[in-house]
Length: 191
Image (cartoon, rainbow, N blue to C red):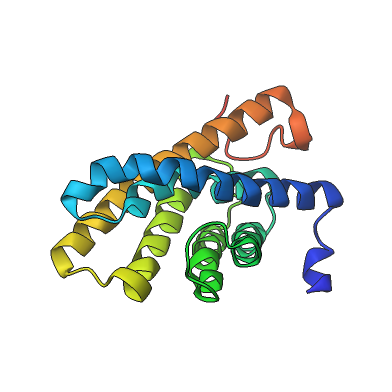
């Protein structure tokens, strides 16, 4: 573990911790608002809200630009949830349900050979994070029938993609301000 963490600078570890904390802080605000829309449709609120709290995983991966960043952000979130007991009663299962979306983002970026700082990277990473989190939560907790599951995954893809677009726009702003030395990274989509 120490060898894995040594590839990150102290500044990058602070970014990772901040993204994890912001993801946890956003969830209790966004989920009740999403329940207003999803409740009558029998869709878990996290499917819609997830795009906006998974956005922090995508944003962290794009800002840091190193392999394993998304997994580390998600794992830190899981540890924070277990230690504080702030959100949910999933207990030790939180390690799996919180870490999988970050792991899937890292797998996607590895397959795409990308650092997660272009519009397409962030869009697909947001979709991947939210759909994997929604699917695993359904598998472990909800066990929805097929049609509501498909509707839930479709809405998860939509909100995850939107969260990815928001993350990309934040990364783009950081690039324009030349903060964190990320100017010029990516595919030039910001110019």
